[in-house]
Length: 192
Length: 192
DNA sequence: GCCAGAATGTTAGTCGCTAACATTCTGCGT
DNA sequence: ACGCAGAATGTTAGCGACTAACATTCTGGC
Image (cartoon, rainbow over all chains, first blue to last red; front, side, top):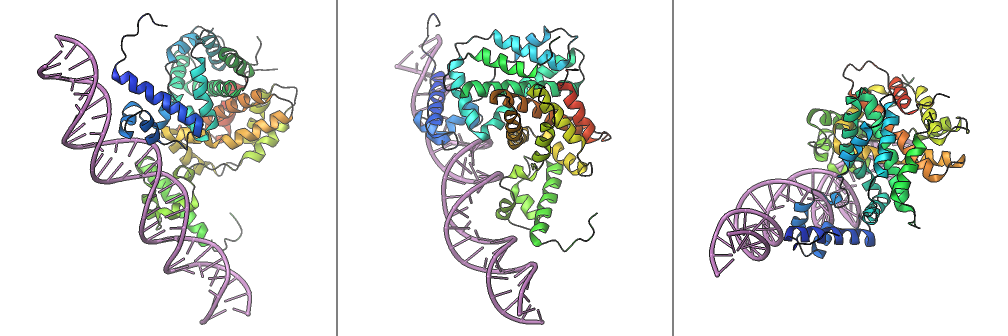
């Protein structure tokens, strides 16, 4: 909880309204069945305005400000390890340190993505930036570009699969960090 | 070369025309800049007809009749191995056996996909069937569903990354099978 | 309370894609 | 060669995501 909440600017308020009503409608009637016009109307705004806040419908669900932490964690892994193992262990230690409070919102979003085939592709594309960041890090440390791309893509795919499994768990008991760690364990099978 | 080429039915001819002109236009002016109407016109046909042959624009590039071979190869891997390793080695042995003659067309297609960000997502979604098939196989052999999904997604991501690297190689000398094998080696780092 | 600039609305249009129905053409048997 | 069933294609109309150019209203600091 922040100390003081100075009256949110109008921009912040409409953004929040779009996010809230968007998530709500997606959950109630499905992503494909929900129209941008509907979301806008629910938020007391025009379709046009929606696109001033999000470049596309899917961006209401896909945001990703996590990159810097990840690459830092990868950099800390010993360079003697193969790129694939470095990436996997780096991601694992990064997510272990992540704060859990944001988990509920993330869960709502991931749930919708996991259940909408068309969005799974979009999610994958949206990991493009993260992938680039990881590749950069690995190459800077001596890996071949091709190998780095393979390692990054593969590790990210495992991470996303782990996210889906966590979001789909009805009980909702497990922590996000544990789910991620488990997913990366499936992949990092070398014990040396 | 087949022994005799009985006059291709009209359906086959328009299909071929759409594929040919589609690929051509995509290569010359880019995927996003190419309109379905353009492709149809070039093939001497209507936009409507295009959609009778392909459910969506992207399907002109994405076809995948490979699943049965893959799962069979995975089934042959020893069940004592972790799911991830089984999947990786199964895929490797499957692609080793694949005929190389189709490579040139595949290369054209993958090249376009690799260079069109929006299509990378579509490609990923189109691997959904293959993923399901692999998961089924792994689960049937005793893996947990969550673990199987992680393993399948991760291995497929590596394979696709390998495909991109191969298609982007300007020299065009390396064989498809070699590229795939190399990609899977990056991921299967356990030597035991 | 005023006013610059932010925020929003309007209109019009493109592209991907679908549906319902009409029309033409192909390739088979005779 | 001929005719006909059914395949193949065309037409029209429309929805939803998204963009562009321009007009309008409203906000928030002074």
